[in-house]
Image (tube, rainbow, N blue to C red; front, side, top):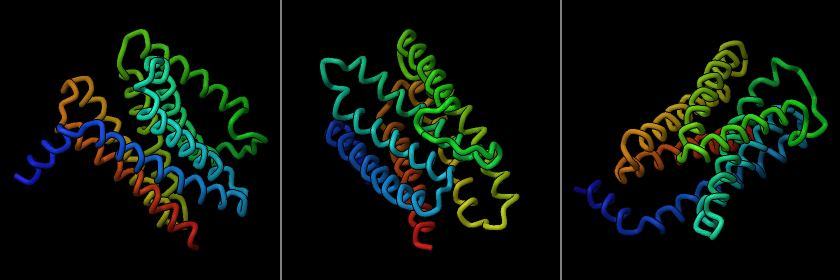
Length: 220
C-alpha cells in the first residue's frame, strides 16, 4: 500500500518529481566535479581528469534535461542532452583506459582521441534523431559499460589498493544495469510510471555511490 501511494503521488506530480530528480543529480555531479578537480590539481593523475569531465557532462546533461527540453527548441535540446550523456560515458571509459595507454594530453576536452569520441557521439545522436527515441544511446551505453565493467574488474584484480577499485567495479556494473533497465523501460514497457520510478531510483543510487567513492578518496 505504501509503494502504491508513492507511485500515485509521483503520478500526480510528475513535473515536480522530475525537477527534484534532476536537481539532485546535478547537485551530486557538482560536488564530484569540485572534489575531483581539487584532487587532480594535487595529484596530476590523468584518469581523475577524465573522471571529472564525465561528471561535468552528466551534470550539464541533467541540467538541460529538465530546464531546457520544454522550450521551443525541445527537439534540439533533446539531442544536446543525449550528446552530454554519451560523452560522459566515453569519458568514464577513457579514464579507465589511461592506465593502459600511458598518455598525457594537454587538453582533456579537445585532443585527437576525445575528438574521435565526439565524432562517434554525434553519429549516435543523429541516428536517434532520425529514428526517434533514445535506442541508439541506450545500446551504445550498454556496450560501453560492458567494457568498462570488464576493465574496472581487471584493474581491481591487478591492483594492490583494492577498496576504491572494488567500489569502482561495483558502480560500473550498476551503471550497466541502469542503462539496460532504461532501454527495457523505453523500448518494451512504453514508459510505464512504475518502472520509471524504479529506474530513476537506481540512477540516483549509482550517482550516490560515485559520490561516496570520491569523498572516501579525497578524505585520505
